[in-house]
Length: 239
Image (cartoon, rainbow, N blue to C red; front, side, top):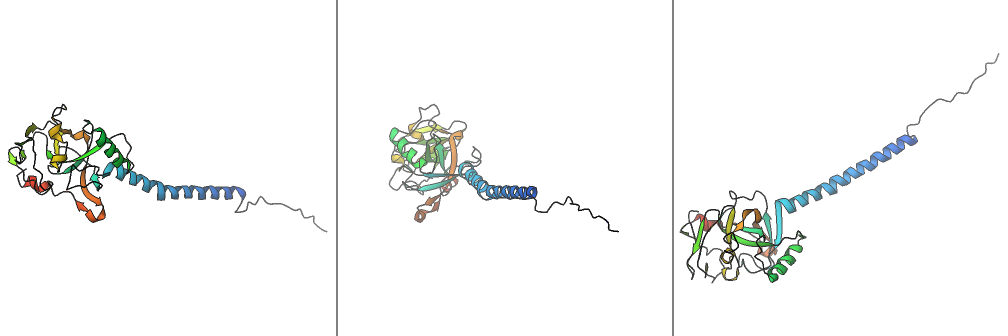
């Protein structure tokens, strides 16, 4: 007696069903997006943080800091931890022109230099040497006499432009709180703190305007050098 055999289809799902293929394709797209994020977005974010938070890059537009800094020099600044406790006399600093020291010609030069590095924040910057900290009395009798800080004469021959006097103008300024007194190394061609004493802050720069301390000239490569030698002049005077 023959027995009827019934054909029966099992509910078998192949390993590479349509649903799983879609899932794996989505997984590959997700992994690709994560790879792109890791290899491109994260490094770019790190670069931007380093560029705008940790370090600054500037082109020197004028002769006010010759011969320490020449027109066209590129400098790198350390922008971290700027305060009255960390700033030192003799350092070269960059600060925003919040007190409007720059002339129209200066502004054009400064704007072209900062835009060259992609800075378009609406701010303009100056670079000078820090001479006095809050509470310091910075003075000079003019006519080739040395600059004094708290009565101590400073030998600035290591960074002043050769042949330029410490100051042709006589002055005496007590640096206000939270401010610094600054001068260019090319004293005869630098409209610095000496010439802005009627600006409401005795010609001094507020520390909140200081964006960084210049660390080095990095271009032209033939002129590469660090910019920390100015400290010695003040340390030798006991400051």
